[in-house]
Amino acid sequence: MRRLSPYASNDATSSDNSLPLKFVAVTRGPGMRSNLAVGLDTAKGIATALDKPLIGVHHMQAHALTPRLLSAMANKAQDARPLEPAFPFLTVLVSGGHTMLLNSTSLTEHRTLAETQDIAIGDFLDKATRAILPPERLRPPFGKALEEFAFCSQIRKVDETMTENLDIEKGSEYPLSEEVIQPSEPDYSDYSPPSRRQDELESRSTRWGWALTPPLAESKGGDKSSRRMVYSFAGLLTSVERLVKRPDPLFSLRERQELAREVQRVAFQHLGSRILLYLESSTTFTGDTVVVSGGVASNSFLRHVLRSTLDARGYQHIKLCFPPIELCTDNALMIAWAAIEMHRAGYTSSLDIGPIRKWSMDSNAADGGILGPAGWIKNNGDDEEN
Image: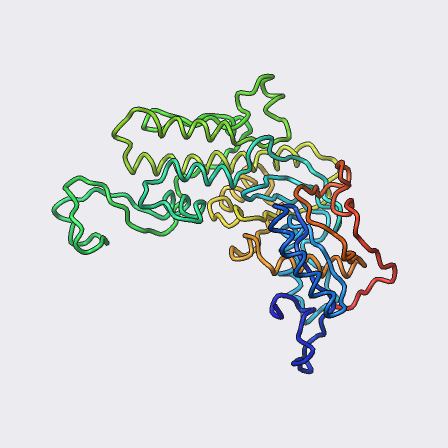
C-alpha cells in the first residue's frame, strides 16, 4: 500500500526520505453497496487503529482526476507548478456502468452535460463482443478482445501455398479455403472521420448489404431530437444482435470483423458527437482540454476516433487527455490521488459514513453531488503541504 500514495509509509520502517501516513483513503461510491462496505469497514478499522483521518472517495471523481496525478508525478521536483489539466475542462467518463460528459469546473464541481439514457458504453461493448466474436476468440476483458479482433487481426484463407507460413498451432488441420486469424499491427487506415454533422448521422452501407444506424439519427423530432444531450446504445446493441442471429449460415470471419469495426466506429463517433455539440453551442466554456477516463478509455481506436474527429471539425486546439492504459480501469492509485486532492482542499470523512450505490458528481443533482452526502468534515485550516 505504501506505493499507492506519496502520503503513505510505514512509520516503523520509514526512512529519512519517506513521508508519514496522513490519512486512509477508500472508495465510498458509487457502486454495489455490499462490495463497497467491505472496503469501507476495513479502511475504518485501519484509520481507527492508526488514529488517522479517513477520506471516502467518489469513484468517478477519481477517474476524472487521474491525469492530474500524472502531472503531479511529472512535477514532483517543482511542486509549485500548477497541476494539469487545470480547471475548467470537459470530462468524458466511459466504463461498464457509466457514460457521461461533464463540465469539470473545480475539484468538487462537475456539471452533467450528457449521460446515457439506457445502457453504458462499456456494457454495450461487452454484450456486442459476446454476439460478434467466434467462441475461440471470446475472452475477458471483452472490450479488449473486440478491439484486437477488429483492428489487430488479419483474416486470411488457407491454401496449399501458405499453410507452412501460417502462424497456426502445430497439429491443426485446416481444410482449404477455411478462414484463419493472424495477429497484426493496429490498422485504422480505413477510418474517415465525419467532417460534417450530417456525416455523423449517415448509415454506411457495407459490402455485406447491412448498415448500422447511428444512435438518435432517426429519433422522432428530426434533427432537433438527434441533438439531445444524451447517449444511447441500447438500439445499436439490438441491431447488432439481430444481424448476428439472422438465418445465415455463412456469417464469415471477415463479416464478423467488419461488424466489430463498425460497432466501435458508430459507438465512438456517438461519444464524440456530444462533445462537438457542446463545443459548438457553449459560449461560457473557457477550457481547452477533454479528459477521457474509465475502462473504455483504454481502447486505442476510441483515442484515434476522437482526435481525428475533433481535428476534422476544426477543434485542433482542443487537447485530449487520456490516462495511461493501465490506469484507465479501476485502480487503487486513482483513489489515493483523489483523496490527496480532497485532503489538500481540507476535506476528510467521519467514521460513520456508509457506502453509496448511486452518487452524482453534479452539485445541482438531487443528492447534492460530491459534497452532498453527509459525512464530510471541512477543515478551514487547510493543509496545503505538498
